[in-house]
Length: 247
Image (cartoon, rainbow, N blue to C red; front, side):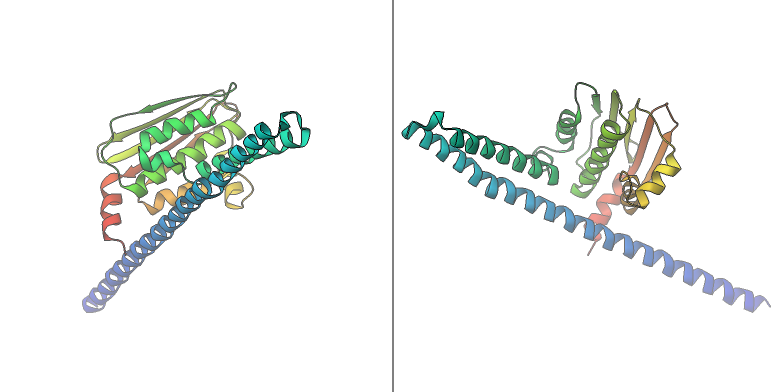
């Protein structure tokens, strides 16, 4: 009987070890896929900015030159063409920044979060950003934090109809903590997650999935009429180690 129990225990431990190994392998693969997606976003953003955007800018300058050379400033079709060109340039730049803001790669997470707040804020919604001292973060971890903040601020501005939003990012021990709090209309968290999983609402479910891929935790708190709070805790060391050992 003891031998049977011992063999069963060994088999259970072996299966548990295999399960842990498989889960870790899956997480590494999923993170790799996510990094490839972000690299593709970066490439598309660069192509839009340096390719189509530059061509549209050149076209805009050419139309201006034609207007000066031929006295066409009073031509309604030419003015319309110039106006359409300006709109196309701005929309291309906005799409490029939405795909992958260059400031995140050039200057870093702190500057990118402040830029994001400025882009999201409006006369009806004020956003306060407080970023504490940060270590040199892994690129994937910084991107994840930016994407979570992007989703949270978009949700607060468009869906929660918040008038005030506070975003805080700080290091707590060996963990990175992102906190986003708003004074919006609030919601039923479980119902919001169900809608998100069904693709009917915001990306709260996808945020949770991405956070878990990096060994982090997501906590959501809200009640109708009492605002919304999102808290993400991410292990800094694990993200750096995983990045260095992934295949």
